[in-house]
Length: 394
Image (cartoon, rainbow, N blue to C red; front, top):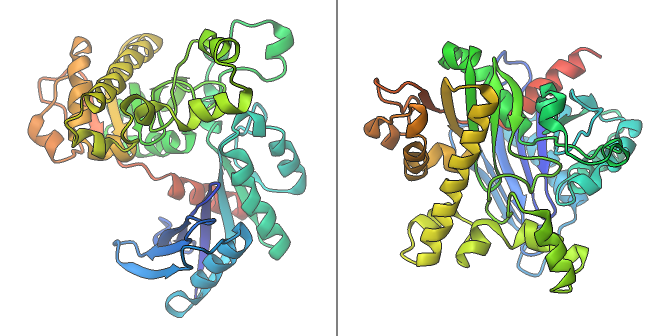
């Protein structure tokens, strides 16, 4: 029977999970999966480290599955898998840690109460991230749980990088740039020394391109600037999020279209981005396969914005030594990487087309002044590492 650490990433209608062997030096993956469609046709899927399906269960189209029942099912499956596993700790992805949580933290009642206060800063994520922690604390109060924050990696940014030009009476309440996808960026920063010491020690921009998308400027593996700000809707266009938006547009939506705050929230978080621009899909694969002019425009806008933000981050770094692509689109779309590289030729980037088509890891040509890499991220492993480190220290 192996001791395992369970990692949970909970959303409003799904729970992604991964289990890692806590006794192995490198925290070997035991299994991973998700329960999706909690309130409409719930479906459980589990896979081993090689991608082989280990289990599947469907509750039916008319079924509803509460988070409590879903977590109980995941736990039971984990305990019964291949001779049984002993759960020793649970790590959780929590989107927002605010100003005070700049390191992973044991999820005590006091910590949870503080994290509740940050829900307005991440309305689509925070409440759902915290729900499983409370459920497990009720079901098994002795189980150690660790909250790992997507904002924490960016705590190294200087005051100028996170400041808004607003009165102190507002900024003193925590209204500032935070940055997100920090667990992904932290994983890349830890991996870079083994892949490219030059990139690890130098001026590197990492492009986390997935359904959620952002970019981070790193100097010596530390965050100095990022595209996301006060919330995770800022910066690049994403699958359904609009990205950077003139605040005057929000005022226009209120005054001229009569929208209320919740309607605007729905617009900028769920009905914009690639989906809103194309009118077709939030999935980049679907858009790349489409001949529709709106799909082509959505792709062009997406890569144009990446190119502009890259220029901003290069300016923040005062130069560029390496560019890293990661996350779903960044890791798997050679076409998007090619388009971004074309817009970045001004800073010395040249791609090796064959290496790019093969998804790297190094995809820059020998003549390129900037190294370009494709590095798969692993936020779940990063959470498992933090969890083992923290429970080992207590």
